Each structure stands twice: as C-alpha cells, then as structure tokens.
Length: 309
Ligand SMILES: Cc1cc2nc3c(=O)[nH]c(=O)nc-3n(C[C@H](O)[C@H](O)[C@H](O)COP(=O)(O)O)c2cc1C
Image (cartoon, rainbow, N blue to C red; front, side, top):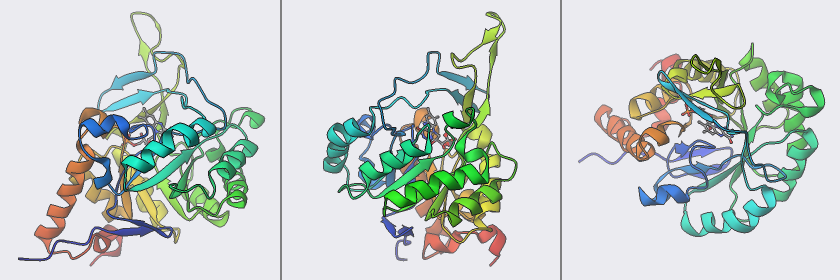
C-alpha cells in the first residue's frame, strides 16, 4: 500500500498539521462546531476579528443570501481584546490542539498597534491575521487596504509591536491587488491571506429599500471563487511569502484549484454555514486526490498551474 501523502505545511515559521483552515468570522471561536466535529483535526482556526474595544456590530438585517453567495454586514461584532484574552482564548487553548490564528481589526493605525501589542507573546496564540478591509476613520472611512500606502502603514505599525507571524489579509476591492501585496510584504508581512469579501448590496423591491441595515455588505461564497482564484494566481507569482487562499471553497475540488493557483493553504468560510463539515470533508478529499494521483506531498501542487510539471 502506498504511504499516506504528507499534508503538513509551514507558513511564516508556523507549522500546520495540514493546510485546511477555517476563515475568520465564519467559525466564531470554534466552540459551536464541536457538536459536529473536533476542530483539532484542522490545520488551524482563524478567529472572529478582534478589536481594541468590544463591538456590538451593525444594525439588522445583517445577512442576505444571493445567487451562489452571501452578503454580510456583521460589522465586526466581537468581545474586544481584553475579554478575548480572559474568556475565549483559555477555552480555545484547552479544547483545541491546532494553530490559533487571531484575526485583528481596527479603525485607526494606533488601534491595530495596541491590539497587536496586547496579543504579542501570549501563550497559545500562533499567529495574527490582519484584516485591512476596515474603514480608516481618520481618512474619511476609506479602507486601510484600499491603497498601498495606508496598507503598508498599518502593517509597519503592527510589525513594530509583535514578533508573532503576521498574515495580512487582502481586500479584493482594489484596482491592483499585486501592488498592495508587495507593499505589505515590504512593510513586514510574513504571509498573505486572500480574499476578503467583495463589496455589494441588495434592494428589497417590496419595501423599496436596501435589504441590509448597513446598506452595503461583503459578498462571499461560491459566487466569489473565480475572483479569489485569480487573485491568488496573480499575488503568489509576485511575492515570495506564502499565500493562504479563500473565497467560495465548498469542497476539495475548489481547494485544489487554490493550491494549483499558488496557495500554500486554504480557508473555508461561508462553506461552513451550508455544511458544518465542509472543512473536514475538504481535508479528506484533498488527501484522496493526492493519493489517487500519486503525489507524496501537498507541496507538489502549490502553483502547479503556472509552474507546470
Ligand atoms: C459572516 C461573515 C463574517 C466575516 N467576518 C470576518 C472578520 O471578522 N474578519 C475578516 O478578516 N474576515 C471576515 N469575513 C471574511 C471571510 O473570512 C472570508 O475572507 C470571505 O468570506 C471569503 O471566503 P468564503 O467565500 O469562503 O466565505 C467574514 C465573512 C462572513 C461570511
């Protein structure tokens, strides 16, 4: 019998038992999923976005289904960094033996820096993922990730505060994602994750007004996958740090596209809502594919579609 393929992966010095993660905001802090499977089988958990102060989130309605997708305007509802450290992280540490990647967000560069400094050196945190899609309140609400300059500024400020591996999460709502990717790598990112949601909206024609309480929301799910695969393809060829791919993954076939486009790991987001077992099924499907095709390691697939054989 052939040996099981090697699924282990190293990203920014972080050793993952396998390259299947769950995406921020779609898995909470992991507890709710324990009724369905043991999240420790995954390569890692990316937490809900954590901010300096607790946030109640946006007014309802906050979710709206679209053809092959989901619009959300949760508005970063979270307990705040202090309560996360006191009440949530200890439970995660106790329950899960997998990488814990804390997603962070802020409204000013200073807030990002302060959250990072509070998380730096805390036992049980394996890496930070920086959500740069948040509005910069000092710059008229434009997202930090919208320009290379502001994206680099926030990453440099965080880099100053922490020696944790830094994964910077790119927004697809930009003209040139490669330019932003290069700027954040130059500013100190150890890895990149992409994509965050695409800005969208829906209108209720009976009420004759926007569906979402916040008017705009982020589009995710299968509808965004081609955009995400394209972004991973472009970015992975233009930076020399690992890329974590996400956007519309609902199974192993989707995930394999991301590896071949250049991703070193993948994350399941909206797919967790349609079937809470999506991440585990994706993992076993990847293993089956590698075995069937005779690959010894998942690493052989990274960038295969542009590197060739
Ligand atoms: C309900 C919901 C909440 C999310 N919250 C966050 C968040 O707090 N921080 C973040 O960086 N991304 C957040 N995201 C974006 C996802 O992590 C992911 O990048 C995006 O949804 C694309 O992947 P998917 O199509 O598999 O969902 C959220 C997405 C959804 C659907």
